[in-house]
Length: 263
Image (cartoon, rainbow, N blue to C red; front, side, top):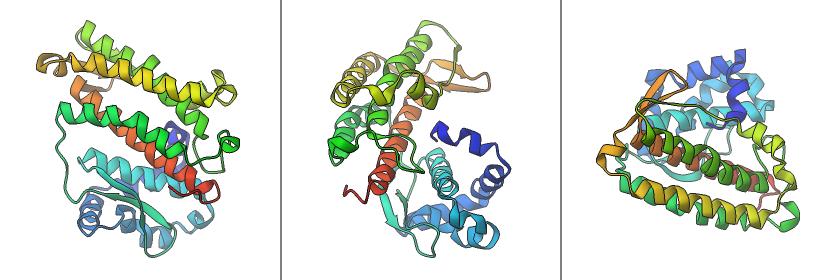
């Protein structure tokens, strides 16, 4: 989930919504809806309308709900099929549609997903006129330019260093970064869009070159995330692919917010 939700997640409303969405019984409903080809978020519409009427006027809270459902589905191994399916019942016009069953992804599949991302981002953002690349409508995470800069810098300054740390020593300590702070500190909105997009493609190519050399022993190497979670290199790569998927959803939100720009 994008770190723009980190603070919201700690609020009383955020904790209440997370308790609703991440309840173990809810996953059964999400999975059933996915097998029917419906957005998983449909499962919570009735409860939100009954117990959380304030969400009717809170776009950010509704977006948090969609992101939280997505986090649950990815945790159970489901893959995103399409970002926008019609949600019946109100509160959400559209919601993500997930694969009917969990999808097993081997290391090669994950690398292929990572390799496809730069062109996918370029194709999606090509729908936005040059004059609007810096626009950040209310309720969205980043502008188109900020997305390009963030993806470039994360590959270059976070993902690749984490991989190198895992390969260099056992139980390497890994830490997250605050993408919103980077956007401010690094002046993303003042950068050139074409340069940022090309930089992302270059950074992703460098990252993939390093990963392609990793055999089964390297893929099994273990690190410690923020002192509380142990994960293998293969699991880290899966997290990276899931992060890509989150950005594709957020770019879709941005396209909707920019006066209904078509995908």
